[in-house]
Image (cartoon, rainbow, N blue to C red; front, side, top):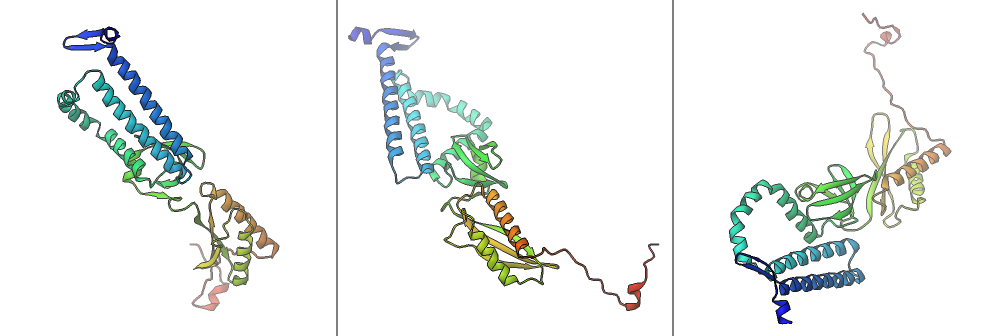
Length: 280
């Protein structure tokens, strides 16, 4: 048995590859695979961790085990890691300057996974685009927009830019709808009507309740803002459209008209009001 394990497969200069080296590599790979499966199963069954955090933990564990397996594998093959690192230091420095943006994305990916402020299934806003996080890798993050288009973002864009996480603290966010009314209408009664209409939508949260406010006195109208809370953050534009339709129907049913822009012209001499203006 010892003769089989010590059998030389490759001999190049001072390096010799034996059967026991390959056997050790196979055992190492098997053990790593078993550890990964056990970790994934344990994380998946944990009910105290949300899905986004589970994904981050699994990815970090996977990358860590892969790196450790590779380093141990190189050692088991008979290579001295210290010699490899010293010999390749100058080469790594040169490559580092050329691939600094790539390394920046890798480091940003590790930060995102460790930090946990952005997780899979979170709804975020980057450069004015609202999207849902679908996958976080070491170099890139895949997101899906409201138009169901996939965008691949370099991780450095997320860590270095301004990102709004709509679902960071909880999955209910506040949204607004603006409606303009004429000054001649019964504004308090209409505000009460808007609240009743908004509460009828099944996606609108009852706690907290919708809030109706006067937010602006315009030249020809009063601006009313309907504020409501909803947990359907990603598809909220559809919900806002449905609420607008309900508001429009309520206004029509109560014979409430939308205001039109009006301009009042004051003449210095009242006699000029009836005269025609010569365009020349």
